[in-house]
Image (cartoon, rainbow, N blue to C red; front, side, top):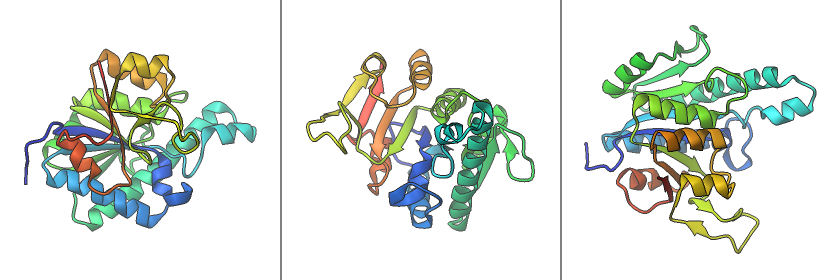
Length: 239
């Protein structure tokens, strides 16, 4: 049932590590199930949901480069990893009777639809969850940048970044007990203080298009629904 939402159309950005469970590696089916349930909860509230997932649980580009693989090739391998994650999430959602489409920035018709802006909008209008894979389709651009780009393209109300912490901190809360959480901050502060929210290209693109970013803890059931309703549940980054 549709409810009064602060954010009615959202781009949900997930790191690949969220698909890998506590260790952040490989595909952890219970973790994928939890993510699917959060997406379903958002859809049940009446939100239109687009998802972009990284591929770090399967392959990290930096590690591949360290092994002597060329940067362009490493990034292409990372794009393929995002397709694997996208298909896994699609499968879990469709097992729960949720219509879903995987759209890839790199054409691979046997696995996913090609990403076409108008077609993505049409899927959202029909109530389908759209999962956008393969980043931007180009090397040297992260899935953070892909998420910002797709959020702007589809006219999302906000870019929501689901992480394992409940917002943006002054330091790493896992290692720095003195780190404090921001309830809100500006794009310029996030960039100037190098707070590692997203890469600089993604934040700059959001700033130029006034796209709000909300960083929240995806591992806490129900938090995504709170974010959609505009309740305090993370860190809001805006102009």
